[in-house]
Each structure stands twice: as structure tokens, then as C-alpha cells.
Image (cartoon, rainbow, N blue to C red; front, side):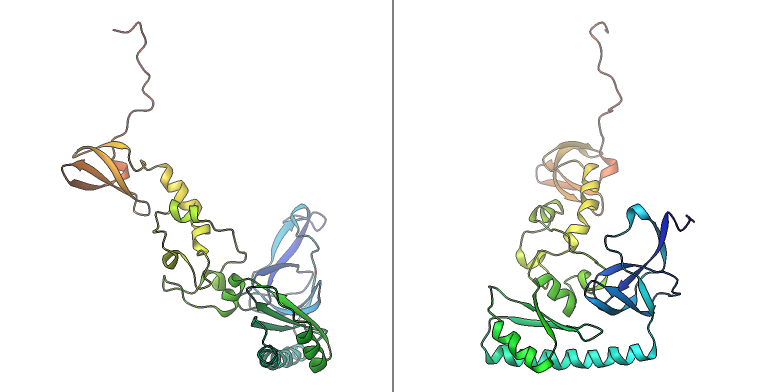
Length: 283
């Protein structure tokens, strides 16, 4: 292991059940996965759950503005946490009532109370810009603390609510993805998917996250497969590739006269790439 001058013990902390994992300086606090800990953040002290074991990073790879673990959560900390959860639940109901009363075109998604009760953060989605100044006054008057209204996008909303995708498994964003990658329609084309919005969109209504993190696998696999339209030679004769089955590494070849065969890629007869062309003096 590297010495303390060139490396640091890092631990991953998650603040929400389905939230992003953040890196912190583990300091000298003994923690294991699943423990609750008090940490310093840019917004103030916060309680989180240890999501990863301790690992070592060199100083040149440390995250920007790395904060330290303060302590393992105590019984008193847990009591404060429970009080904050009750405040969040009550604030969620109150804010939704005021949104309805003021006829605001916004959807409240989540409420977060900072550990030291110095601020309440209200997360919402909206199609257009919303003038929520009067709503903020309602909230300040009720809770006598700083109020932040934060507009989030629909992917973040799906992560908070969770759910089951069309694959029958828990949503990727709420189960293991830490960050949202850019997703494009080109990725769906690369994976030979039908460009039907209902088939390639997640519960959030946007392109499915899995299209992004599976994209590289499909690109690598397709490099070893003959493209559609290419003439190939199979054990049953020559024909044209009309379909690729990327995951099973198979291609469908049209042999003519309406006859199609599905052939493993490794059985496609390829030209000998190492064979040198004959020179003019040969023969």
C-alpha cells in the first residue's frame, strides 16, 4: 500500500436509497458497508450510508473538494435523522397543498431536510418556467428556515420513485447507475432495435439508460460480424447477409430462391487476409 503522503483512504457514501455514490476521505473512522456516517458537505453536515468499502487513491486522482468523514452515526444522530424524515414527509404534503392552492404548473417530487435543519430543499419537475416566489414565502413562514426549490429532470424523478422496467427488473437508474450518461437514437440503431418510442423509452419517457452502457458491447461485437448486404460464403453456399443477431453472434443469410439460413459468425468462410497477392513475375 502506498504511504499516506502519496495516497488517501477513500470511502463511498450514498445519501438517498437510490442516489449517487459520493467519495469522502475516510480519515481514521472505522466503517463498513451499510454503516451510517456523518459527513461534511458543501451544504453542511449530512448523514449518509456507506455504499463501498475503503479503497486507496493516489493524490493526483482524488475528487475535487474532497470532504472528510466526521464520525460514525450515534444514537443521537439517528434520532435527529428520524425527526428530519418526519419533517420531510410533512413538508411534502404541505408544499403539494400550496402548489394546488396557488395553481402552479409544477410537480413536487421530493423534499430533503439538511441534517442540521438549516435548509429544506424541494425538488420538482415542470414543463416550463414557474414563478414560485409566493410559494417560497409560504414555506419560509411555515418552517422558519432557508428554502430552496430545485428543478430536476425526469430521469432524476424516475430514480427517486423507482419502478420496474420492461425487462422485468428494477430500473437501472434506481438500482446501480451512479450517473446519467448521454443516450442517442444512434445507440438504438446500433443495437438493431425497432425505433418505436414505446419500445426504447423508459418509465421517464426518455431513451432507456441501458442503451448507453450496453452500447460499447454491441459496437465491439459488430466489428467481428459481416454487415447486412455483404456477400458471404457459408457451408450451404454463397448468399447475402440480411440480418444480424448480435448477442448470439449469428447472421441470417439469403441464399436466393427464398431460402434463408441462420449461421454462426465463426462458420462464415472468410478470405485469407494473410495471403499475399501474386506478383507480376509469378506464373
